[in-house]
Every structure is written in C-alpha cells, then in structure tokens.
Length: 446
Figure (cartoon, helix red, strand yellow):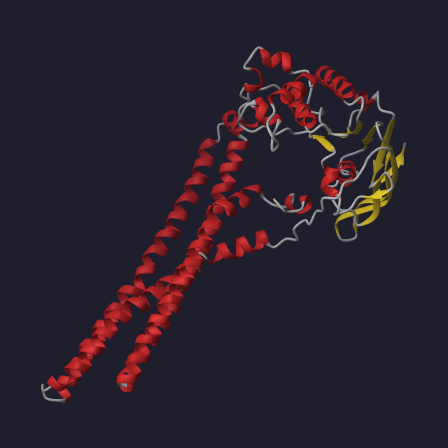
C-alpha cells in the first residue's frame, strides 16, 4: 500500500497476489527452517565436543565419514531440491496468471469455446507443480535414510573392529562403546534435521528473493500539512519521463482557475493522462513545479492535495458487494451520504426499483449496464465531496446518447467544482471553457 503509483503500474497483479498469499507464507517456513537448523547445530556442537573429549581418534574417523557423506548429499540431493524450488515458483506463478486471465475473459472464453486449451495449460502447470513438490518430498527423506544407514554401518564397524582387536574381550570398553552408540543415536537425527532444514531453505529460497524484491521500493513519505485551493492551480515548466531521456511531458506551463471547466485532448500517447496524473499528485515531476494558491505541492502536503480530487476512470472496477459499499469504498459508510450522492449521479430512482443502496452489483459490476456503472463511479467520486473532479475518458466506452446524458449530469454536479476532462471526442466538451491540445508532451493549441 505504500508503493508509489508509478512503481505499482509496472507490476503484474497476479504476481503480487501470489507474493502476498503464497510467497509470504513460504518465507515464514524458510525462516522457521533456519531457526530449527540453528538449534540443531548447537546440539551437534555439544555432543561432538563431548565425543572429542572422550576419544578424539574415533571422533575424527566418524567426522571424516559423516562430512564426506554430507558433501555427497549437498552436491547431489540439495542441487535437485533447489531446482525443484525454482520450478515450483515458476509454475505457481503460471497458476495465478491462468486464473486471472480466465476469470477476466470468461465471456470471451465462452464465445470462442477454447476452454479446453486453458484446461490443458492449467493441467500442465498443475502437474509440474505437483511433480516439483513430490521431488522435494522424496529428496528431503533421502539424506535421513542414507545417513541412518551410514551411521548404523559405522557402529557395526567399530564394534567389529574392537572385538577383533581385543579378541572378544571388550568388557572394559563397553562404557566407551555405549557412549559412542548413544551419541550417534542422538547425533544422527540432528544431522538429518540440519540437512532437511537446509534442503527446505533451498526449496523455498525463491520466496525470499521474491518478497525481498517486492518490498525493496522507496516508500512514499507523505506529510499531513494542509494546502488551500481557493484561487488557482499553476503549472510551471513541467517535465516528466518514465524512461531516461524519453520525455512524456516536456515543458508545460498552465494556469487552472478554481471552478473552471477544462479539457485535454490529443492522440493516444500524447501525454494527456500523464499530465493529469501529475496534476492530481500521483506522479512526481522530474522538473518544474505545481502550485496551489502560490503554495508548492510537494510530499509534505500531497495527502491533503489528493484528498481534494474525485476521480472517474474510463474502466470502472466495482467489487462484488452492494452499491452503497462500492460508493463508500475505503471510507466510513454513511447511508444518508450514499443516498445523496446517488441522487446527484441520477441513479437513485433506478436503484429504488431494485434494493436501493443495497442492490448487489456483481464482480466487476456485471449486473449493471455501462451507463449505470459510470453513474456509480460518479457517486463514488462525489462521496468525498471533492473540490476537483477528474474524468479520464470516463464516457468513451458509452454510446453517444448515454455519453451526452452522463456528461450533462457531470457538468451539473460539478457546477461549484473544478472540472478536468481527458477526452478524445470534442462533442462532449461543448461546456468547457478551455480545451488544450497535446502533442509529444507539449500543449500545441488552446
């Protein structure tokens, strides 16, 4: 949530979802494995110290044998466990991508009838995910079985050697033999747990990389200073770029009077949306300043500035809930206030024929028409009682008649507000006081 908007738009939402749900949980298992391995290392150190004190020659022989076997396990089993971990992360990412892609295009899938291909793709990812987990589970047990066999063989070898050396008279060595048998009996499980923990760390190591990468961003440090907007917004020599030496906004100077109705037009890629995103405080300019009533808009007051903006996007996302919940999204719920903004957005009477503010919209607003969704988006923007209302091509997906009707309603509700419109069609801008045409990040016509 602290991620700057500019950084967020470069991320894949399915990958972020996977990081939050799966990789964060896997990371806790990895940390647990590290702590568990550390505790077992202390046990091994204490037992090994005792064995050295009792008989360093036998201990040294055991050490050589066990270290060689451990190296063998690390070079064979652990390498394959790590490979399985990489495959696990990759196919799990495919899971989320396939699910998001399928749910988002369900209507298209039904029309084109290619659900078989999607099922095969998902089945392939599912099989490889299961295969990676099976490989990890099998290989995790391999060191235990191998080391137990080796340890038991060492004990048999030591007893056999002592019996042979002392012609069967080992009664005076029983205490020594018993001590080493008991030490190995306790040591081998600890070594096994260390190896298991090590392999688990290798299997889940991608989770650490992913979570670390997702959290390694410069978090916004926003102050709570107030900023007024009683007269004008002034933009001075504004410059912005997404990539080095590729300007998107290049030297824009502009004054927006409070209560004015203005629009930005231009071809796709001309910089309209980027310019507005900078004005409303989502992007930080590379050069130049934005002032409100001669006060510089910066990180100290950007929260207060953003709270003055009501935003109506082109693509409205309504979550699966009631109309009222969607309107008050993220803010305290007030029935009276919800009803008031629904009336302003001219959708209240329609909702009264249903369940009123408690009408369910379905995921993505699937139970509403395009015009109705747009009106709810207007109500949502008005719910915060904004001073600035921004329309980002908000009516471009509607038919001409509905677009004209909604634009007329927007002009009415924004009578006492500053209205900033991004549009392609000039027909909807007949009541704007100024229209600015952008090209290559510059205002070329007013």
